[in-house]
Length: 137
Image (tube, rainbow, N blue to C red):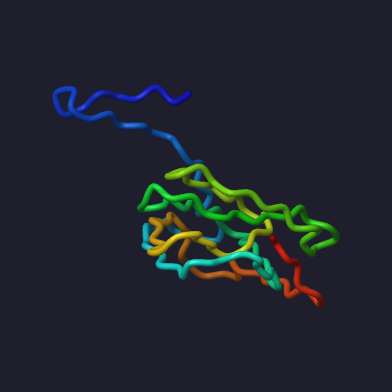
């Protein structure tokens, strides 16, 4: 429901506020970077999830291809049962602070994403390795 602003004599539209970034805790800064990820295939093993307590992340595919997204609720400081879904072609995601999520899982090559992330001091990465991997089919 974001109303675009017309720019460039009507040849382009600008959509502001598409992600709510939260990166300033403990002196963090926002950075824009590019992630290159290898194509994944099914069945896929999920043996690790991560979360970032000091900053949110936004991932914007640089292609019109869907990708797999894996998230989980927190259960006593660990990820609960992973939930997975496939994005719409070209859809970006905004992962909030402290949300357990899987790694980037493009379903096509190349898997290029523009990412808006936090850089700075502080422990901003927590990983959880499952004793038994989950399988997504």
